[in-house]
Image (cartoon, rainbow, N blue to C red; front, top):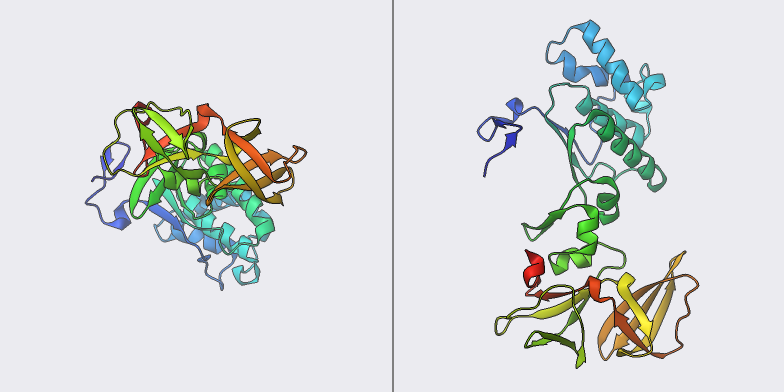
Length: 296
């Protein structure tokens, strides 16, 4: 493939000429330097005049709430303070085409992650610079990104907005990985366009055409769109977990688990019950991929 920044093809250019800034998992700072000198280093290294360096460093420090720390040595800062410096060193250059983040909040204390994530989102909106952010935390991806790319076994299985990935997964891995709890993936059969789970007919949102012989067919439906009903699929209630404003209810039909996500005050049957699926959010998957015309 090719790599283009705007209309410029940089595929064959060496990394130094691509103008990419990187922020790594662990803060990369010069401990013996002050915060000011750390931020100024990329500019001084490129021969930028000191007057311009001063203006740019103070501008970026203001964006990152680092102004009062500028005279301090970086060695004395907390992990999140050092990571702010790493971020600032990526932002300080005006010629940067893209900033690449490699799980930059992994080493940050949980209570500070939200603050830094919000700051990154704010910076993106203010400066409009392209940011590519690698993370294994699906909550981080869904709250931070405008566009999310989900990779599985080295292949891109879906790219889209957080809402698209949540409501319309194109692959069962996306359904399972995105969401907490993840999507229910249930084995099913397809006969003349009719989808059945354990003999019960299930309506799906996607158009069901011909299914290749021997293909693995499954229903995907998120716990948010499974409901207790007067009729439908018979289940046993196995476990109810309190998740604050929600309840995660695990039920079983035979050996197959079906999870529901209910409001905290919704009643839960004691043992035996029936569940039904919201047809608008229930989809058929063939060999892991969204089936029929709806996958186009």
